[in-house]
Length: 270
Image (cartoon, rainbow, N blue to C red; front, side, top):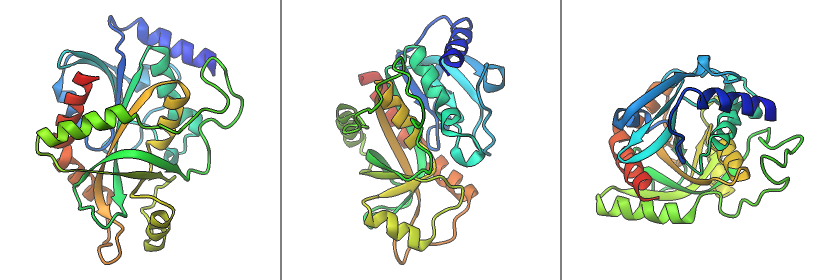
């Protein structure tokens, strides 16, 4: 594993001139952020040694280096999901490589179903914490001390300073944001009404099929993390309706400008 991480990092270093400190995983809601990145240099996943290739519609597959405003960033356009058949080491491999490239701050986004009765479809939720219900843990197996400690602390999985800054940015831009706990599940099915009820009972405000593995590994690696969800459907009793991947994408696209605004200003401030 260590050799693969180093091989991949060395390959990427040979292709780029500047190594950023901030990484962004462009999940639902942040896909169009790439249009704001200048001086772009793109590396398709299929050209990168040891990288998986995304198979999900709406998820492109390339690393993008460039500037977001005045800040050098590395963006992942297209993430890897457990439900695609990858194991957790593959799902989180890009985060390991980011660390090897010198990334210190990680920004993540996703689409999620909301269980909080105060939420509305299209809301932006700042993730304050998560609950991991994936059947495989990304740190399962041998621990490499070069990557992090055996038993990493997760008391501040999502950086409190970043959360406070994001809330202030949203307020001054008159953008409605909510806060909540994200439940990470394996997917690929959307939740049954009983599952929504269960996830609410155990403390969740929203549920999705990504993010948690990457955030765990980022914390293991000592990165500071910020995450946001777009609430694309509701698992609230009386508001549950049939949902499709296409509808999730449409709602995500509509909310993109607002999430992009918050992320751009946050990246400039950290």
